[in-house]
Structures are given as C-alpha cells and as structure tokens.
Image 1 (cartoon, rainbow over the protein chains, first blue to last red):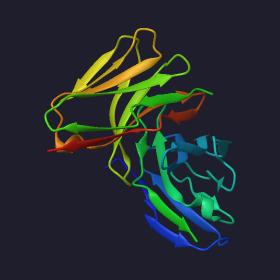
Image 2: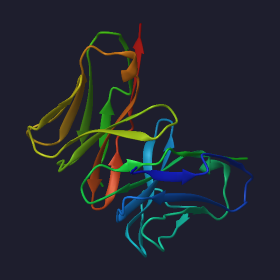
Image 3: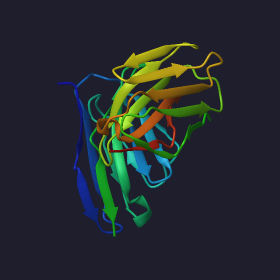
Image 4: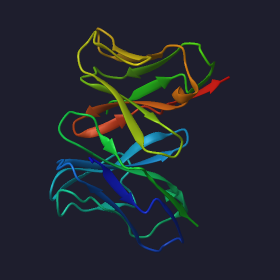
Length: 111
Length: 109
C-alpha cells in the first residue's frame, strides 16, 4: 500500500530538548516536504527536497533542520524546540506534478 | 510568491443543500489541487485541474478551473454529513507547494 508514515503521531516535549520527527514513503518519490498547520494560517511549508541530498527552505524554515540521505526518508529535526513550534506537522511526498501524498500528522506540544 | 485565497473561511450548510468554495490565486494557475481534511488528520486528495475551463466531478463534488486560470471553485451538491471537514486548495510554485488557508464545512441535520 502506497503511504507516507510519520512518527510519532503525538509528542509532548520541553523547551530546548532536541527532537526528530521521522517521515518515510514507499513510493520511490523524489519530492518530499514538511508543513506545519496552525489555526487561521493554514498549511505552511517548512522545507522541501527535490531529491537525495537536495533540500531547500520553504516559507517558515526558522528553527528547523532536515536531511535527505536516502530517497525514502526525510526527517524533521528541531534542535532546540520552543513553544511557538507547537503545531500539527505533516510530511508529504509526490512524483512530479501530481497529487501529494500526506502522512497522518504529528501533533507536537512544546511546554 | 503565489498566494491562494479561499472563501468563505467557514460555512454551515443544512444537509441536502448545495455549497460552493472558491480559491483565488494571485497569479496564473498552472495546476490546482483540492484536498479534504478531517480535523487533525492527514489530507485526502480530491481532484486535480490543469487546464483553463477544466471541470471534474467525483460523486457529488465538482471542481472547475476558470478560463483565465486564476480561480477555482469546488461545488458540493446535496451535502451529507460525510462532506464535513476542511477543504484546501493547493498549487505548485517553483517547487514550493502553496496552500489556501482552508474552508471549514459543517453540515447540520
């Protein structure tokens, strides 16, 4: 089954404690991306990757890092989380100009 | 960058009634996607439009991309409780995916 898998689904952490949200896709897609969704602001792109070892900033990259060492995985790293990074995060992958497949989301709370 | 504005932000519709959601772009659209999202869950792909004047339907949902390719509409006929959720439009802009802010649809009995 074609899918994008994010882990964890829910996470509560404290300010400053490094965390990683994993994202994996099984469709051999070259394009992967991360978003955060906040009330009234919709989905905003954090980072995207057009291929292995190629990553670019989206609209809200501050406070986040990503890596793309292999095609299937695109982890999102928060080196020093802060409360304003409390949000619902989505990972997505797609092939070319086609529909994007989304993960089920990770609800992060930073206290 | 390209911006997508959705209207209305939210709407409440009685079951069985029709509804329309609009998505207006600040630039020409070369592809427009519609998604549906249940609160707190992932996005489900509905339809993709690529040509001006294109219209697609799936069950009771119809989407159109206008001739000048700067606006798309999503129309639901005879709404049902299963149509409740957040509808988002999306386009691509030089590798970046841009989303509208979403329209929350509530269907009442």
